[in-house]
Image (spheres, rainbow, N blue to C red):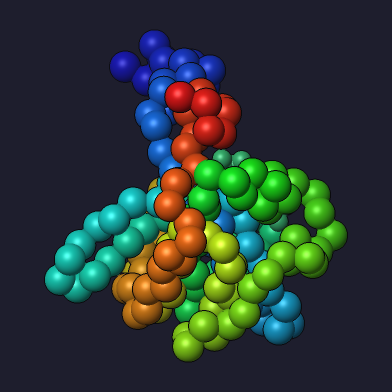
Length: 160
Ligand SMILES: Cc1cc2nc3c(=O)[nH]c(=O)nc-3n(C[C@H](O)[C@H](O)[C@H](O)COP(=O)(O)O)c2cc1C
């Protein structure tokens, strides 16, 4: 059946599934923070508390994520379009000018996001051209000032 579905069909179909937008971050082996824009996030399990996201294998920091002691997942608020773009583009230092600090696990916490999860790596799975990262949630940070989430649909943010 695969031959009946082109890459374009697949991408268009996936774009028609409404998601939020997250920034997944870790501290790299050289001690610097790294993050990328991700919409492949999903909740997995309550007991234990597991979540997943997938990372394209040729990502510049794929090895750092595979070796990191912790990572964080920031659910972006509606007004964080600049961060969504910055963490998906060729920016020399994506964290420059972004308010962030290290959480209890050491992972970067992006301030002003709706909610940030800190995670301990649980398992990695092969997912074709992506690696599926499953993490156990070790801490949760809510921002009471942010109420509305960013949405992603048909390649556009906040346009549904
Ligand atoms: C809305 C949106 C969602 C994205 N979701 C993912 C994702 O789930 N997994 C992924 O690997 N890349 C995703 N990307 C692309 C990455 O952000 C991009 O490939 C990454 O920032 C490139 O980083 P690098 O230049 O350091 O390799 C997404 C981009 C956008 C704009």
